[in-house]
Image (tube, rainbow, N blue to C red):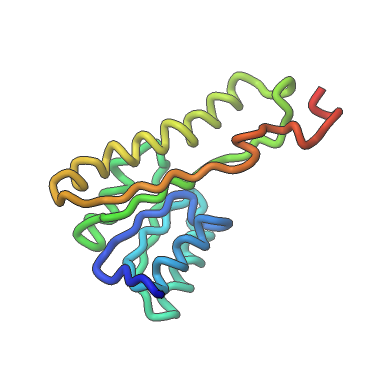
Amino acid sequence: MSFSFKGHTVVVTGAGGGLGKTYSLLFASRGANVVVNDFNGAAAQKVVDQIVQAGGKAVVNTSSVTDGNAVIKSALDAFSGVTILINNAGILRDKGFKNMTDQEWDQITEVHLKGAFACTKAAWPIFRKQKFGRIINTASAAGLYGMLYLGPTLW
């Protein structure tokens, strides 16, 4: 069974690589318009180029996810709507907890938590008005388990 997303617009944060890129390519292959959000504009443009070359529709957005209004506005400007938001953006600070600074912790929570909140808050009134919308929040094993897999280096 194959699902079509024709007529839907999907906003994917952190879509310049990894899972975000994969989500973007998958939704585009099923007919969705895609907003490829990533702070790395060159990486985001490569994803958009892949989608367009395959016959899909996509645009780049390089806004910080903490400016959810700007992220969602790009979907409204390019495609006149949004029906799906994938909060995927994240940053990695490859340090054990004991080595993490307050500033690094603040950066992580800013992107992972505030970013998901800001984008969801911006999309929410649109979803309510159209009586439809889907939100997907992603997390990684590192987010669930931290740096414990590094064993003694954590301590």
